[in-house]
Length: 460
Ligand code: PLP
Figure 1 (tube, rainbow, N blue to C red):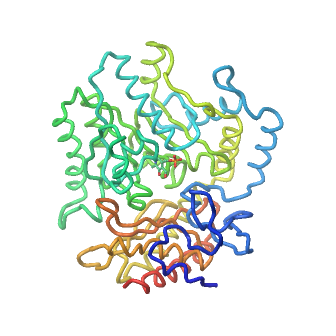
Figure 2 (tube, rainbow, N blue to C red):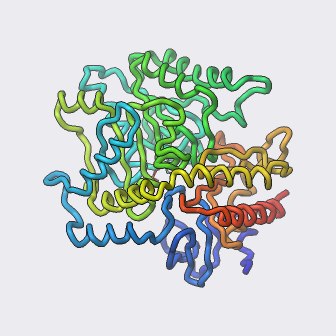
């Protein structure tokens, strides 16, 4: 049933069907979720929603998976918590071993934390400690890209390139530098080949490093496939191989943030595998634990580990819940099921189907400028005008209207909106669990088409 809430321009979440609104600051007036199984989340009024975005690209295995629940029970029964200042645990060790065994070449260690932002903070500090252990105290500048998101804690927020998120907190943020993203739909020139565009976009890093002074640059941070801020934007051509070459040549550490696009979401365990590169540091989270527990990790190269362990001997960092055995047990179970059931093959197959259905449905839509992504990480970008690619006025909050219209139709999608120098057109991100089937995808795309037209009907 419609509530009328979606007609309010104030709405940022899903619409205010619940009165009084939730006292929590997380999501005022969101419906209470009471149960979840497979692709479906059910609210307190008994309404079902297809989780077509895994929340925020988190639920890779779907909800309520018996094997993960069993692993959690067993871990809780055996050992729920032991502080890493005193002990390691079998769950954490086994997860670390697994992450390293499956990691890109050169990665030799895993540092377990509680989420994506924590992983990014730890990666920044690992980079800095690596530099200081080597006597390179001058290396302090972090370069990242506009239209990126790396988390909401202060270091991660400073690193991200979304001005809308940063603006009011700027006085608290460390100095960072941002170059253009590799964003073909928005930045590639007409008649510019992929190779030329990749070279031009990567060349921005070289220019920025020269401008700052190579010996002062610590790290370059990027999402291989950009997630929340710009909507599943994949790189073009050999962009990342060029980036790696530039970083290596200047002794700048390459930090890949795969918090959203990683752990199988794009069809390979790590998105960077498809780029043929191996970073110095990599962050993962979301799909690592599939939402069963909060968990993130930094994967670090042998050379970073060696510099620190042969130097001061320990990484000067830590959190109370790092390496948490419950979180590690959940993540281990999630990753074991994904491997056992060969779900990455399904990500590739269903990803291709999703993409084809999106192209078919939106390819000629007057207000859909782009359909893009990799694997089960796909997005559509909405534009006021397909020719000029002009976005809708951000004040219209088209993305939020589409989200509300989708929720009314029992569909969860992840929309983000045009902002100041942010993702200029509103976009809708789809990231369904890896267990998704053809019929689910057909239903998702049908409901999305209705929701997009309903949202547009209010503004266009
Ligand atoms: N990095 C990327 C690429 C993300 O997409 C996110 C979250 O959306 C984060 C970091 C922050 O992760 P968390 O929300 O778990 O702190």
